[in-house]
Image (cartoon, rainbow over all chains, first blue to last red; front, top):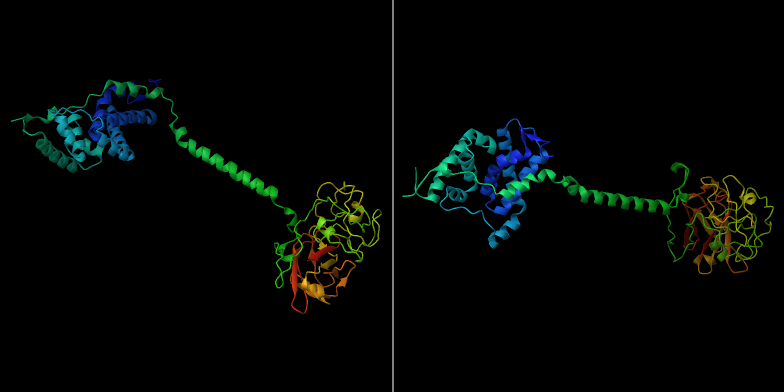
Length: 161
Length: 295
């Protein structure tokens, strides 16, 4: 049954295995909570299976997954605003970032910089592609990248190589 | 000094269980749509059932026998029940039942074709009235005054005894339109089913017998004036007193230039020169005479 549908010439399993890390990164960066991130991760791939859009290429599939994951996170936060507030008090299981890791510094940056930095450095997207995915102007993405780098520097400390 | 490189930023490693769970997605039954709409479906179905039940109940309980078949322009205003007297506190007879079930009727001394006698009319019987076909204005199935031919089975004797004795033999043949009540219905052939309104929509040519009880302030009046729903010319009547002490008078709307139609509701108003007044609603439904009691 899994092989019935193809997503940019990939079976569902192949698509999941190939882009799981990308979707996980988006969800973790946005939600910073393991359980919430897992929910959004599952929702994203559920949508992929149910909607089954006609993808032109794997890049198209990847961009679609990132966008859907971001929307899932936004709607998840909106739906669970009250529960999230309660969980914060209960110290829900946060995603364990190593303080020596750059990801920790990235997770401390404001949301609007985090998305751009994540896509640029982790997913190796170009500015133009980030602009398309986030539906922002290229110059906006550039300025966000610049400010984001400065914020990470201030958080992480030290000097860039 | 701590050094860092942005290339150290790496994608996150997805836990294996997340991937395993995600791979089970195709095997899950896609019932999200059904689940989403289930409450709406149940609510809609319940609403439809309730509305249908209410509509059916209303339809079953609505009496269409009083609906006039004549065009509204040709009919006097059919009004709803309102028996409230205007001046003195008077009660008017209840005349809203158009097709009463004949459960009681006189056994003896029935007048011409007065086979369907409502219980109300039997309760206040005249004792020395002229040939009254004992019927209310509503459920009168008596013979029209124009055809004074007596029934072959019923005696053509004026009604002189109170109509208190119930009929023992039920009617079996319901009246049909156009059939003379005297021929169709006789004391021996009373129908067991409620009678349908004969002569629906036809002109009412009968007389209205007005009975005034002692409690009514018009009881003392030598002359009363009767009018029907502000149509025609009011008719001046001289009530008489029978042996039971009930004052009665005969009012013929057709003689007063009024054309009443069977099946329509009319307001009969009687008053005297002293300002006393009584009103009652009635619905002529048969070809015979009508009887209205003012208590």
